[in-house]
Length: 160
Picture 1 (tube, rainbow, N blue to C red):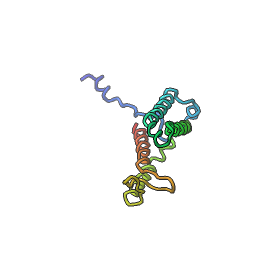
Picture 2 (picture 1 turned 180 degrees about the vertical axis):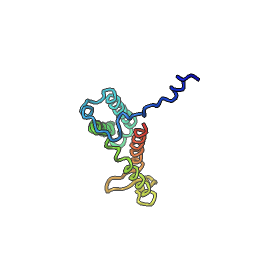
Picture 3 (picture 1 turned 60 degrees about the horizontal axis):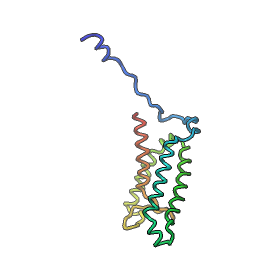
Picture 4 (picture 1 turned 90 degrees about the vertical axis):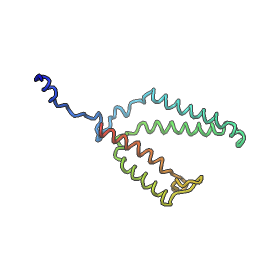
């Protein structure tokens, strides 16, 4: 074995550095920057496609039940407009703040799921999978989906 081969095996590699560490402070230049136009266009196109599909699937039923073929189209378009406003507002939110909510969100999803099983759930459509909070009915599975996504992002960022 040559000495050059031995030296190349003993070379220590620098540890991998995170691009944005978990305690990173927000980059205010990026927060004030405009949105990615391609990503925004894809989101708007998907929302528009969804509105068209709702109209296509429900025009006959809306005509029979409500005597207005655009009944569900108008409702879906209003929800789509509200979703675009929420999308714009959320795009300005610093996602680094979600790291601190990872384990509380997982705990909340677990507690709400157990509450449904124990008997605190609201029955609708033959299934007890809702939690009633006044006039609002919350499905713990939706909170669990958000918690899993946040936890996976946190875990992958931590492990790089």
